[in-house]
Image 1 (tube, one colour):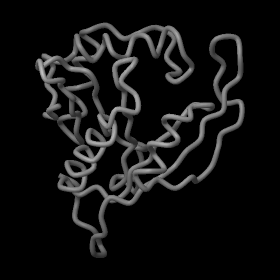
Image 2 (image 1 turned 90 degrees about the horizontal axis):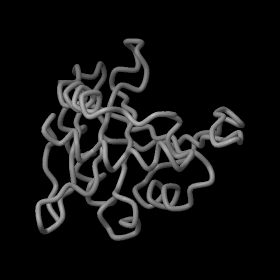
Image 3 (image 1 turned 180 degrees about the horizontal axis):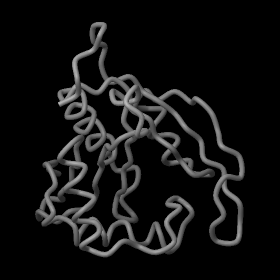
Length: 173
């Protein structure tokens, strides 16, 4: 498997990976899958300020992606980022998620980010296990925060340090 920086040219593959999560699960709280154009815009924005990586199989086909983006819009949060990962259905627990996330953390750390935040719709044993294995610590749960597929869903939040920098910290790049 190969990991590389994404570009807008990966939008179709990323949109195809994401669509079943939107349509068939509560893992994403979106109700309609984004179009290829919308996914291209999301990739471009993430690459500009944070990172978006794709995972390719041995044939060069994109089978997963991970990205970081702003945690909150207020300036004091600018050293923290929210991260997400999606693998093609059927690829969970194959090691791809771990290597993809580790590469993402390296990119975000190099840009000056200090903390990664992740939210997981519950239940989601695979995601919870991956995040714990990668050093995320639980920080709280929003109870019955999202209505999807005729049910209320909880979202568990966790965080992981990326880097330690001096005070005052240098601006993220």
